[in-house]
Length: 284
Length: 304
Image 1 (cartoon, rainbow over the protein chains, first blue to last red):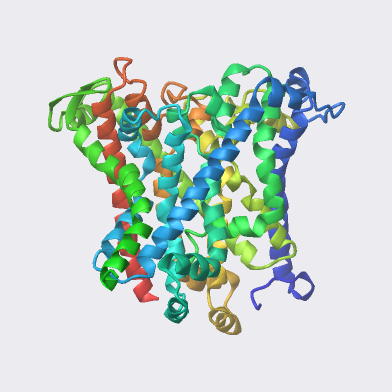
Image 2 (tube, rainbow over the protein chains, first blue to last red):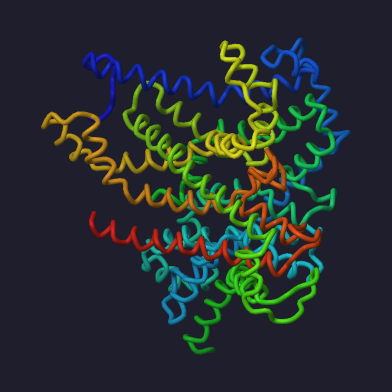
């Protein structure tokens, strides 16, 4: 591309610009990586070492802190809770979201625009503001301190964007494909399942990332609805942990590393998908 | 056999209703419930008599609600202004630099997006530790020989909000950066080529061609920033406290809303009436922001 800056072919003025941009990004990379590196290193140090020599490397790499945090302090439990609550929520989001998208994109009927607008309004309304009526509702249903409360909220939180993105993709599938299947005797469910869904598979990957990252990271709703230690998710467990062991920095950094590292590793392998998925709502 | 039309209606209901029921009960119903609840007086979770707009009057005109509310709104405004000014400007700059495809830009692009994936809670606690006196940041300043710059980043009333905003920018700037990058990459290259052939400078191309053509993305990022600023909660919870310490200097509408609905501002009990009224105000502000953006976005797209 003509806008590409290549050092070898650039004029002296452009070379200064290239060097400036390079320097900017090198500093930026350090500002992102160093705090993470320091966090991981601090998990191998004692609290005294962390406070006295914050920049020093650990004397030895010893994973005993990890065992303490994960097993003795129950962090493995939080991790497991986050995994299954996110998975179950996403399962419902993908099933009900793709069905909803199919219902508003593949049929022509009077209420269609109205139903689509209801789904769209869900994208705009701030769900945090709804927490008081939700609390009253969940109390009536006896869902407080049960995972079903946050799963319901996570599913509702993710459905509008899922339906918005998926129906956009489904609209582009030619009707002929559907007619052909219908002549072969396919029911509407079979058309949804075997004709439309396979075609929108890439979009499914997109909405999975778009929604599972915020669900995995959500703190507000577990804070309100899941105070039961058996069901605490990772962000909420981290908060409990910081309240209980606020002076043991060695363990705090270990807990932070446990909370942050898995996402980093996943990202290292799937960066492209994460970037595409997370920015899907804002990039056309 | 059933009538064809009836069968189709049943299928539509089958596909649409589960999602419709969940979205209506969890997202739409609470909007109306908040409006309704805000017009009543409450003791704990029990609704009493209709009081009209009294709860709103209390927020705008009665102590301590009034001071707390305007203090929190002021901080939300600081969040909005600083995030717009620093984060989104930086994001535009990063996006532009990345669009020039210098050596390593694919790598930098991935690096900048890393903190976007982390939970606010983890990032907040991590930097909460680093910003404590005598830890990483102050230690680093001393190492540079700039010992006079060390501060109680989260302990100083005049600084705490800015420190927390800075941490949030560290976490989130990758998002606007890559949205802007995608927008700049979409600008037809003929436009830039023509400008360069005419001998236009980089800065002219940037301000006269790129910026006007990515206005839709700038608007989207602006709306997301407004909504994000109204939603600030976890950042305060982890780096200051639910009370917005020190001395309410970091309090936001989100933390105030939570304390009113679940803890308390005044009496130590949950206040559903006043809390719902604050919720309604949050709904209202978000709606206004969204509507303005949709209208201006529509107009801009016609111009393109």
